[in-house]
Image (cartoon, rainbow, N blue to C red; front, side):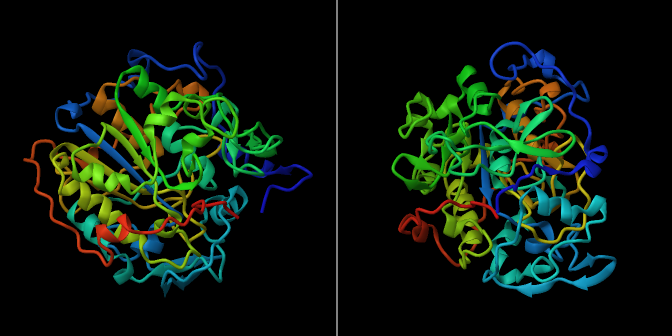
Length: 448
């Protein structure tokens, strides 16, 4: 369902989410901030780069904390929910679920001014049977479960994936992308395709063609610092992948059916299963994003139970490879998928934070069996990456970049401990299953 016209307004919620200050820094889109400008001075940063040489961000789809981790020991992960003031049990379910609305509008409905009590009564109050997600629980118990990870923005996968490479989806200080375009998500979309924007008054209007040069991403920061990176993503036909960088002009190149950017040719890798062999061979760059095939993504409605095994395959490939002792893996779900959550997201600016998602931190330096209650957002993983490789911030906070304000997730690590040996995580589907899997050629999420 696309935003309808006349223009949709959420004026009543504007006061609750005011906050993006005006102004930007001169330079390339949004301004790349020098390290001295970006330092928030809150505390000294340990020499992360002495220990971490590889950062992996694995992005799964559409799950809330209670839906996948309900009852997890020590976590804020209840097995009951609040529906309009009434306590209801979260029904046990399998992966044979229906997709639930998870655009901006449903997110605001679920949020209900912080009461977190207006989720879809028939579909949202569920939790997946633990046996079906056991590899995830095993990893969370061996390493760190971060139970207060929030997306940058209310709403859906499109803006979430942009936030995971840029820490923002702002086009201007007081104008952000919202929901998803009315056609393809990418620079090769049909002429006339439009995106949608939202302002601090929460008015949604038509926006630009989805090939963005209005903001910077980590790709440019990494390139400028000569730090190698790759984005492993499933193909959905020809040169097209399900990658946030499909919609970034700096990486794709000029809008059109064929990519012309140098980064696209060398750094956006399909199929995504190449990550498994590259990790096992010690052929990972310093910074990596990994996106699964639709059938392995945990997306509700795909009828597949392979997602938890895919996460295990990624972790096991790194764990058995030569780079394990210097790697940090962040496993995160891009949005809450419409499922119940009990924690009101902190109000950081006019677009979020969004509704909470699970996050697992896997590393030889991760604390063992630790539940971190630190308040994190998608910019936290990028901030950790910046600190590990001595990078500047992506852009100034005044524009909407969140990597400066975000907590850097150091609470999940203990760099005084000797690096722990990796213990293989049992899973229903082994690495060989994914290496031989036929691609679905389907986008992970076109949202509803």
